[in-house]
Image 1 (tube, one colour):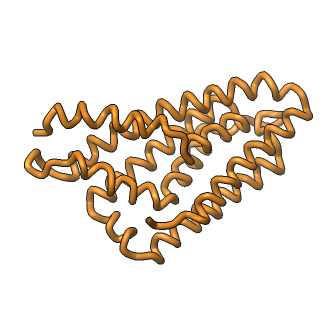
Image 2: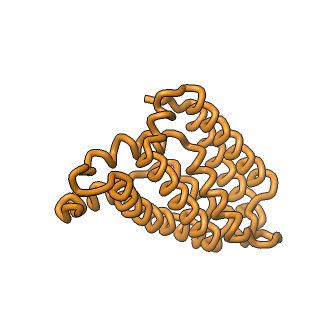
Length: 206
């Protein structure tokens, strides 16, 4: 059985990581500015789901393959770059989705967050480096412990990223009434997605 003290130690460490600005937070910020509060929360849920996939893969030992095979790391990374650039182009070309256009479905925003997180190979390497520090083989199946710690990490990330998206969505709702501001909000969110693509493109495995 997992030691409750270890879990209590993990929670504040995970929360500190969740509060550190990163690619997931910036993605939810951009999604909130472009599409509003609902899609931003859905994107945060997608990111959390993608994180659980990474945790499961790391717990199964597949994360070691990503760490050991440069070509696999690069295939996943460049797929993520291409997808982020696709999102950036769509945001730049169309402006905020809510400005005179049908709202972005929650399912599409969820899928976007899921794919963005899943195609960032650095996440699985981070999980592989961070969670094992709290895993105790004597406490039970390693995969089960990975999933418990991953759930804590993903839940905290969902809450923090959703709050960022809600804030961005609220701010955007007050600004998008102006056509000029609306246009630049779309370009700002497109710029955020493009910057995330550049960050992923220059990412190194170590």
